Image (cartoon, rainbow, N blue to C red; front, side, top):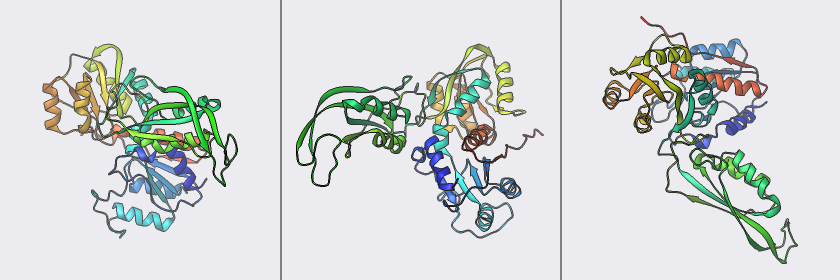
Length: 372
């Protein structure tokens, strides 16, 4: 498999268009035409992940955090410095023919396997996602001949369209008459060039997150029989519902335990699930826990959403003392695991993806947490 094919597979799992505008994802270092000899998956590009790639003869490293952030990192040239410096690692990657790929906010928005794994470990049932206001909804309208309506409908739903709240495969259709005339050089599915044709068609409507537009339109074109597909895309003003549970529609999850449990029992579940010896929590502790909110990494942008959705506890990597304390005063307990340990399911899920693609994969787990 070449690197470009791996990028195509990742596009299907976590479309790059779902990443935040500021987030550089995809191939950041290397040649898309290279044949893959092996893959190392890690949260960050580090000396240990780089050395693992060299030792295992892997020429692709897949990271969660991009090694280049144009605005944040200040990296403007590849000049080696300290042995563990990011520019040095990228410089050595180019020298040794190692490609570096990042799956960041697109992964967080789309990898529902993370939701499934963590909620299963906690013994909780997901009821929604922590929705961010930046996700734009689109309405797609397609005109399809009656003979192909179910084929097209199934394809666009399988690509992520049609999720409204706690429902998926949502669409509306109404029958009508389509008219068209093929010009010279056309090859119409129905009729002949130069003749005005009438066809029984169905107007099919559904919704989708803007980040899934590319893959949904591809599914539409791949299954629609017409040479020229008539379709419309509209931007919608309504927001995504908090109960939405689908790729591209938010971050993390909101989940309910079967019954209320003591906070001390819940903390044991958290330590086991995220393999940590301890964590920070805000001063006020709930008497019991029923509803959980979770977002990996820095969760400060989603903390009000967790509060409004009635969470007893918000689990994340970090939010900061003052924000966590203010939430505690409002009845929301914040658990801060540490940024990296909140993201330990990234390498596990991406490794499973790569192995399912038939690639030799090496996993760099997060280092053991130390409590001093």
